[in-house]
Each structure stands twice: as C-alpha cells, then as structure tokens.
Image 1 (cartoon, one colour):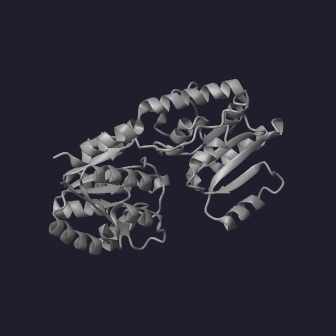
Image 2 (cartoon, rainbow, N blue to C red):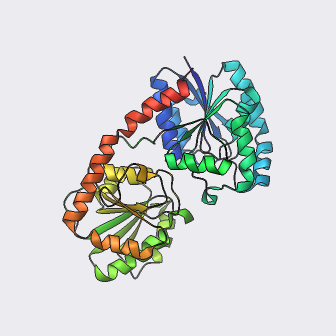
Image 3 (cartoon, one colour):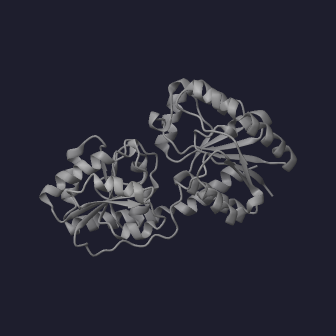
Length: 370
C-alpha cells in the first residue's frame, strides 16, 4: 500500500484543486493511504471541507507555508518562512513511512523543499505556463533547476506546449509526464434550440490575464449590429461585487454579471457561444467542458488546446489582442447551422479523447510506479 503526502498550494476550490481532488479519489480507490497538507494562513475553506468528506479530518494537516514567485528575493523569503512546515513534515514522513510527495502547481515549493531534505520521491504537478502572469521571473531559473535536479523528482505537465516552454526556459531536460486534466463527470448537454437572444458566455476569475475587457469591447461592437444578443460573465465572488460591476453597464442591460456557480452544466445550457480570450492559459478546463456540453467555443490562441482541437472545425482559436477577429467570429456564429456544426464537432472530439480514463491511468502509473 503506497502512502502519499499531497501538498496543496491553496485552500480554494479552483482548477488545480479540482484536479488534486480527482487524483486523490483515484489514489484512494487504488488502495493508497493519503494525507493532504493545506496552508493554515489561507482564508478559504472550500478544499478543506471537500477533503473532510473524502479522507477525514485526521488526514488533513494545516501548516503555515506560502507559494513562491514574483521575485527571487520574495521566493527566498518564502523558503525561510516555510522552514517550520518543512521540519514538521520531515518528521511526519519518517513516522508514517511516506513513499511519495505529490505537490500541485509550480509555485508550490514546499514539496520541493521537503523532498530535497528527505530524499523522498516527489511528483510535482505543474498547471501554469512560464509566464509573469502566474508569478514567474527569469531570476528563479537556477532555484528551480536545483529543486528539480537535486532530488528524485518528476514533473507532470498538462500539455506538450507547456513542457516545451518550461524546458526551454530552464535549459534542461525535465523528467516528466504529459497528463491532460480530467473534466467534470456530469455536464448537461447544451440546449440545441437557439435562445431568444444569442448568448455569449465567459466563466472564470475576473483577473488581468483573462482579458475580459477585450471580450466586453468586442461584444459591444457586435451588439451594435446584432441587438438580440447578450454577454453573460460568470465568476463574480458575491452579490456586492456583482452589483458594483453591473452598475458600470447600466446603459446596456445585455451585459450580465453572474456570481460563481458550481453548477457549470446548467450555465453551459444557457449559452450559444462560450468565449475565453485569455492572454495566457495552459489547458483551460472551462473550454473543454463547454465543448463537452455541446457549446460552440471561441478561445485564445495562447494555450495548448490546439494539440487536441482543430481550428475552424471543432472550435475557433483567436488572438487575445485582435479584437476585430472576435467581432468577426461572433458574426459568423450567428448562423445557427454553422454554429451547431462547430459545437457538435467539438462535443464529439471531446468525448472521443476520454480525458478522465487517460488521467486515471497515467496518474496511477506516475505516482504509484515503484
């Protein structure tokens, strides 16, 4: 029976944490014994509450530690801040005969610190591309080379493009595996009947890299010619924030801000088009899930999804800096037959890839291999 110590970079319940939960469920089903370390300094509790139902309170460890990034000086300070957690977990690993440390996200360096000290096998799941939008600085290169080369470490990348970019940046060959993320198991099929208004939707954090301003501007230009259209922006934290954002568009009731929901299947059913214009993504689950739900997807060129989907056949890849291209794509997709064909092609391609089956097998092979 393998004993796994998982380390999460946060206590939220976003993309990387959802993948962590999926991996934990697979490991438990395979007979592994799993503990999860969470940062005690975090304000969110969604992940902790979810884990209590899966592994119980006794297998959750709350310790003070932080994530790296933004500068070399800050990251060195984070290393010092994490020392208490490292020393505590060193004893925990020895006492419980831990076989593998499994860390999520490239900014989560606690597992790397711990593996360097204990010589325990370390599986490091990178979700981020090499980008300053995720806190990466070139000054961190030497530190990351040491983390990876001076311990038994293997990196999980979630796209071939991401792997190539990291290896070029660090100028080293990285022991690694490519594992595409799993998708939500239950996604309702999209409504094949067009809505009264053509509905364009977005889901995600309202942060700079998501490039929401381009999406809004492109929609406003499109809406001048196509009045029966709406833009639904899902991801608002609470009602107070929703009202504040909505008040900025009181003259345009066709732009709606929606509070974040876990029921993404229902959200996708309300859309005709899903749009993701981010400046940087790795393998955005929202796009994959929207395609699986049968929604026509327009997405950024700045991700690894072109490894799987064909532009103009199963979705559209558009530059996050070319606003006119997004307007033109919206116009093309007003044709119901054209839009439905793209959506159906995307749905079939997504189903044929068996993301969840491949994720299960590769996670077990990577983490549990002797």
